[in-house]
Length: 325
Image (cartoon, rainbow, N blue to C red; front, side, top):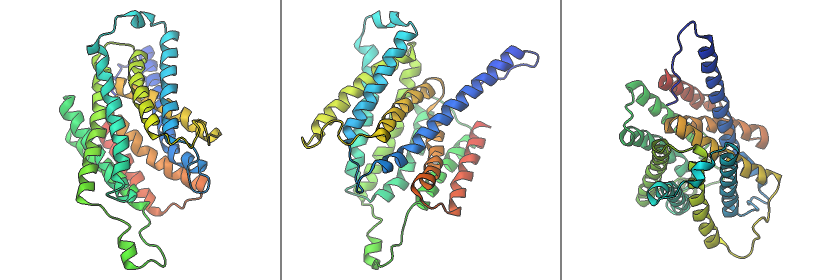
């Protein structure tokens, strides 16, 4: 949770700093919500003939390279060069390899899960990562949550389920009953995999937060360590996924470069949230981004919004009020 200490009356300078900090956090979180929410609509805009024309692995690799270069530039510009000259030790650097490995594992798990369930079922069930993150946040970081905060996270998870369910198209004209019933499906093995996915997602966020907060290092240097491992793992993944038929930058357009820039910025901003805020704030950002996603899909892609859209919107607002009250 983002904590902003109260200020006493009669201290205008402290009061101004307090409000400045609130505005800064508001701008940061608002930007993250916008970037998160615009990701899927932007990818849809790049499609040619219903297919994405660029290599997703090359896009991820460019995002990691961008984050690494920005972290290095920030470290140099802020003058924290002494941190670079300090001797490296395995105990210092090794913890930063774990988040990269966890996220890489989950990215591949998403692909595997499609064999055991339909995408719509995954979209709904993936909201369980809110519960897994909250449980791990409380148990691993020793953060005790109030009853109202647990209720808020439950409402937030319900809002995600409602939003996911409202986007499902369960009926198709001309389909037989057997065809309709076969659209939404999940096997027992698929259920196990989605539970593992949600656990790994929560574990990666909580572990990253613990590492960032436990070491007294500049955030730019910590990001440098994180993205070196992220770049290495994604480079290997890109090499393994290469089919030899598509060039590295084939199919790239201005929209694709906007996706690269946006996702790189989002990763850097998320590290600020985990360093100075909490993983729970991350959950609210992701949930709010669903609403931005829907609004942008309506504005850019002509998708129709239903009155049901107001339900998850109200639930997210209520959850934020209860949690940060």
